[in-house]
Image (cartoon, rainbow, N blue to C red; front, side, top):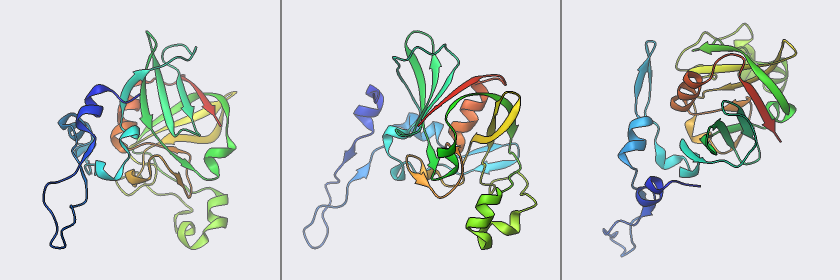
Length: 214
């Protein structure tokens, strides 16, 4: 459910100006200053995160508090993979909802429950062997890992999911490509816009229960 703020101010409106051929100009998205603020440029641990061009991201996938009818305890993370949403359950039948991008392979190989076994700020990234085999020219140069930073595919934060004390190799993380939110992307696990993964990372401790639905 899109909240009233988004409904009133986030809808596309046609500009009055016309082109020389007499056609109405392409619609633009009038973005609420609230969203411009939370998705604006920010310096984080020495890295400048660019502002998100929200015209390229469906408003459904902007961070917002929504009604939630699930039975999970407050503090639980629920990833609804088919709908491209991640919910952080709150008290009183509410949840914070984030849009996510889903990897075509890695994200579909995990379902069920896990816990956050580790949290990282500007994490190091190493491509999986499957990624290297699938696209060797793209990923082999990073086989030894890539330090954290603004060009790192894991983005600003990562939440590492564990099951029975072991790393599942499934991550919830940021992205360098915010316009892929709400879509299937070529690789990766569950990705959020960097501004959103920073927010989620700040709200959940290690040990948080995570449910992934396919």
